Length: 235
Image 1 (spheres, one colour):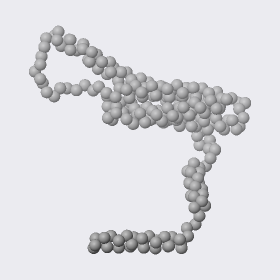
Image 2 (spheres, rainbow, N blue to C red):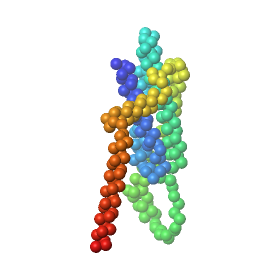
Image 3 (cartoon, rainbow, N blue to C red):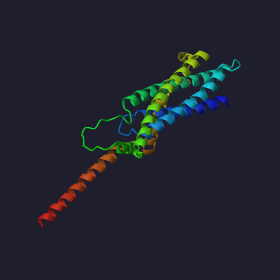
């Protein structure tokens, strides 16, 4: 049950990390907005929650001395997959921090044209306290706070990776995969080859004499149609 639960959690973490990766790629682009930044925040927090749960279960399983050899090998494979997923998550979080810093949502802009409009202190205060200004300030505060929180979360993920390596020593190069490299590609190629053979078996080999007869018949038919058109024009 513990192994199956770890697999399910790891599958959810893989999907969440992939989703976060695709969201990070849009930061700074035309689709960038506060909604995107909020979605990034929710996605990375969900990924970290899954990571904490997986780390606890895998650590407890691999530190169990009564674990069988086959079970230990399976948990070690899950551990390596989990470590690689965390590395990708940390790299994407650092990329999101760099892009978010380079492309702030609400960068201050200086007016290029002076309209000459001026007012007293009361009018300036009223404009400053308008609903639009308050909303702009709230969004800008979110942008700054989110980047600070992202910096803290990057450190937490890095500490999680270091803590895993200290508690459980599973070198990645010692873990053997259950299938050879490229097995999925070979299986797909084999399936396509079987499909081609089955189609050929259903259709049968090509008869050269029949193909030649069909070609001659088509040529004669085209000549007859051309001749009929010429006779119609002459008449």
